[in-house]
Length: 308
Ligand code: NAD
Image (cartoon, rainbow, N blue to C red):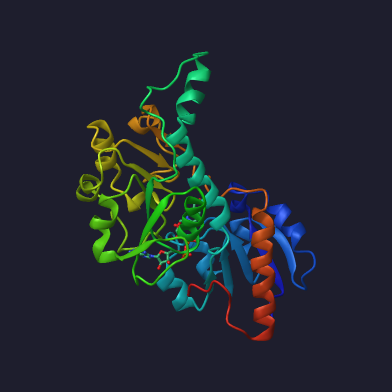
């Protein structure tokens, strides 16, 4: 049974932690916002950040308000008997719409016109720069919640969608599903390549100089996964040497993206501040996950979105 749930103050990176506490007033456990030094007083913690202090605080369960759990030490948590759950399954709509918007921006030149507006400049893009997404190809690497959300929207826009999946079973809205061993072949044929894999030992640096070279010169890379899935210096090089046409990047090796990064200044790069999943519904979605797992703990059932 869960008696006291702490909502770590780091959740403020995404939304006010008090809003989540308000959404959870209907459950039997008490909920309150806590700092790292108060974690000892609760038996479950909802958090954005990870801190070593969580390991010895007597917690039974930690819930990550993100889908990615790459900064949590899974072995140590498991050894301490602390269950970790994540927020996968909740970002298909928000990230799917963000990626659709990024691709539409490149096709319809919206980012270019917005930049021009800042300089009060009225001018068409080059006549052969705009295109329509209809008929364009997209390869989605990773076909989980995010990948499927992206694929559904791209299909609705008339795009030809292919994908890469470790087990290449059919996926709705995806015409061809390639196994991971065919990554090069899959990305070499696409106008857009969207990355939607978790950051793991296997996916770190998945898109490096070789993969960027395998992509079309007119291709656009979309990364909403994690920065380290891409070799960022190799990406900068590909963009600077015109062997890649553009990139839409929500995630970076270092966040916030440092000011000296050349990516800030590139016309054909859209930089968003790790905000692809942001939505005013975020606290409601987190509350639903926490509420369901409190119910499961009481019922002795396996946790939803259980990681370790
Ligand atoms: P998910 O678990 O639903 O899907 C991940 C998919 O990737 C799974 O189907 C898995 O089998 C697949 N995968 C793993 N390794 C692979 C590989 N080597 N090749 C091909 N496929 C592989 O998770 P999700 O909710 O879709 O999120 C995916 C990742 O995206 C998260 O781990 C997180 O890092 C990132 N993310 C970013 C944002 C953002 O705001 N930019 C939001 C949510 C998630």
